[in-house]
Length: 308
Image 1 (cartoon, rainbow, N blue to C red):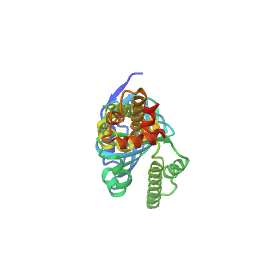
Image 2: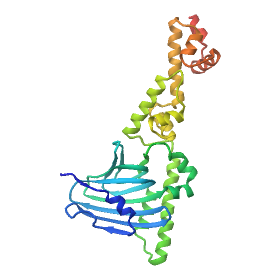
Image 3: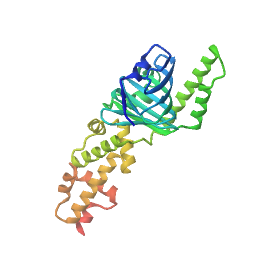
Image 4: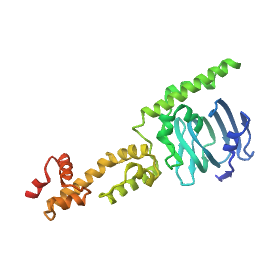
């Protein structure tokens, strides 16, 4: 199937003053429909439907910081930024992502696409979620973050059904939908906080975590702090700490400590070094601190290994 590239229609449609936009695609590509509801300043609920005749790539630019919850009802798409980082939108799954001045493409491979989105601006987040979201995930030099990728819960499906199939009309329908949309928003953010020990790691994240591990191993005498390390590998502190533990079954600090103690044990067993030399080699200025750390790790004193 021939790939068809279109300029940035998604962003222009989102920024349009029209609440319903349809047939913005060329006829040979297929048909599209977008309906937007402005719930509050900085909070948009949108539903999109695409019926495509061919595989397409849509240019997608995000100039402002946006927090986006996407529930994919039908079909599969991907967002691929200029660094080749991929955000998946898979049928039956909920994707929570953070965009900060990104450029890339939205890839459509399936013929029928049906998605619902909650789009939160930076201003809305600062007003309502400064502690739980902004301070955790913003301003870390990573312009695209996949915060969560999980199967859509039954509760979210029921709320969406209430929103999309509302039986009320007029002002009552508006109030009813807004209430359900806020309930959906609060549920998804609460779920994100509850599951924050488990983070989704794509190939970009895994490469960054591998680099973080190598940086620690290369600097055992003077390792970078978590803050410095997160900037060096372009991951948020949250994703660095949780992702590192997920991959290597230990925090960065514990991983490095275990590695240093293994080096020290091998040096002691060789009989070629004294305790002061070994302590300096693994980053301890004072032998007493090294001895305490070694005993805590192996339940034996360094001097007892030297005697053997």
